[in-house]
Amino acid sequence: MMHDFASEVSTAAVIRKDLGMEPADFDRDFLATVDAETRKTIDGFDEWREKLKAAVALARMGKPQEVIEKNGGHPRCVSGICRGRQCV
Image (cartoon, rainbow, N blue to C red):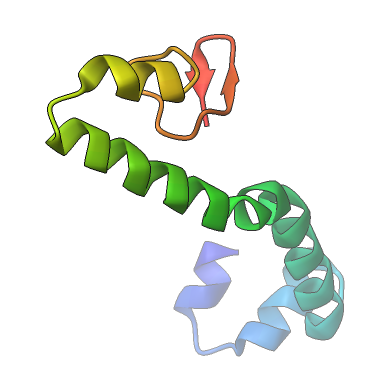
């Protein structure tokens, strides 16, 4: 596929040749996959941003323990949404 993109062939032709599908079908499937994989993050963004602002304000007031307590008990977590050791 990379070699085809390096040639003078159109993107549509490369998609048809290498993926065996129409570009419109590729776009539809690709966008559906991106949407499915990012939906939870996008839907929670505004809430995360507000929690981050609150954490920054507490940190600026010199209250690191409150930052930890309000953010799931993890010192580096600003989302309050933690899965084991991985904060999101």
